[in-house]
Image 1 (cartoon, rainbow, N blue to C red):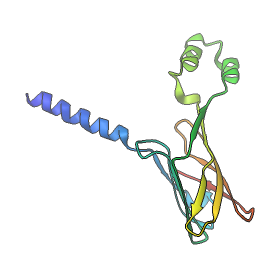
Image 2 (cartoon, one colour):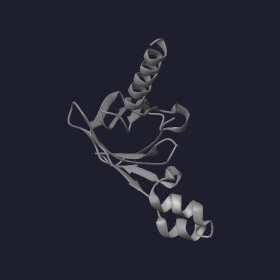
Image 3 (cartoon, rainbow, N blue to C red):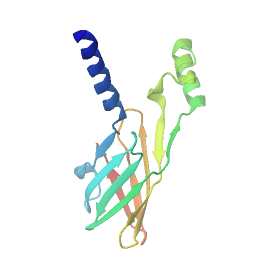
Image 4 (cartoon, rainbow, N blue to C red):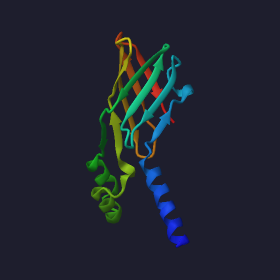
Length: 143
């Protein structure tokens, strides 16, 4: 009975851990110096979210689309000789070759906006840029 309880507790912990979103924090040294705070989340039940504090103003977007793509023609050229590996890629079992992207529009309480574009490979961190309403480009990178 004790073993069954222990297994149940472990499974419950794993299930809860799997439901937590994947959150990234801003890398200050690799982002525009006028961004003081940054967070990017792209998984979990809360959905996607991006927050940047730029020039003292907090900008935020929630629920934006995250696209998942892979260049099958390029992957076929590169891995087609290794039939087993290619079968895993083309069936979707090998997810290391996906590229993710998002284009959130972050809004501030004062009505200002940042139009952003982010991209990242599987098991890597998002990075990209935003454009202010005035046309200023700012770069960001998350850990």
